[in-house]
Image 1: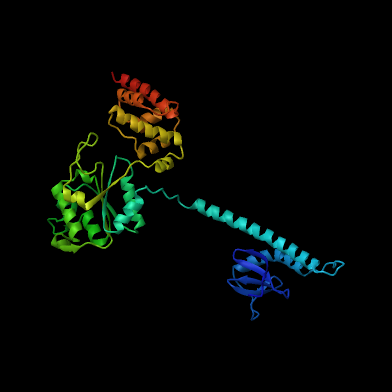
Image 2: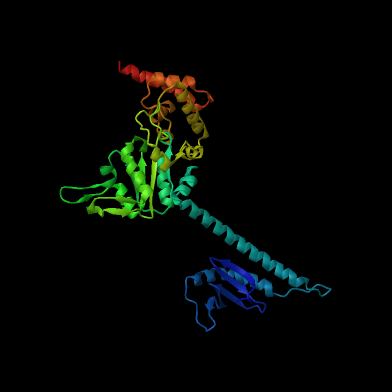
Length: 388
């Protein structure tokens, strides 16, 4: 195969080449086959019977054209130099180059079509890398931030990255028996929990709204993480060691210090829980917002300024990822942008609340979404008037 150094044509991994003695061959999977009457023949005289045979036959006309240029004599120049031979080789090389460029363009197009068919992977939150490091080093992260910042989705992405088939979620720990340990019912059948399934078989458990947990009950999780063993009912196996692929993540709206002005129903967690979990702030990620907004920077800028405005106005509300998705979806309906914001953003706010937010807005007031917000005030006020 080493002697076939003059490449004449190539496609789909098949190469037509010639050696210095002008012998032509088809090279398939690193093996050379002589070509006779458009048929590839191996060294034992057997014809190649494979899918590549059709490709070889497609390439042969182009290959023979290049081959002819390599071997056809031309008029020698007066000084008897080998210029004519160089010219022939140049022509053949240019033909081969053009053929390979066509093949390269075809391959690029095929690759682009393949990529276009692949499902789009959602962007990872900027805290993803830190959380993944913690989990793989035996540390439990506690994701905290406003509602709708993608905490649960981040936990699911981490589980997928770790190759975990099981992802379970509970809402706080208020009773260690029903939320963690499980129990044996009147028929002697063990009623398992998400914690038990992850602890015994591996998987990720997300303790969502962990800041609504009862501290004394949550202490059972701390003890389990500290000792690597947990006592379940005898029907469930009794003392069970933690599975090597069991991961536990907490999430909540506060930083474990108890209620604040926005989240009044939150509990302050004891010092052992604060020590066992590392708090990781999950704020709104602008790149994720741009992806959700389908590249609408005007919408994302408005949402950011809207958040500052409702905080400044003292109005309790949210402008979460979900709100962006709602706006993008409702925008496709045949309704005004003001009504889109009423459905997708302002929600249960009354006209006064929306008015206070609009007055506190310090962003670009030429933004079309802000202009629509001003119309939303009128729209909501008109709706309120219908109730009187």
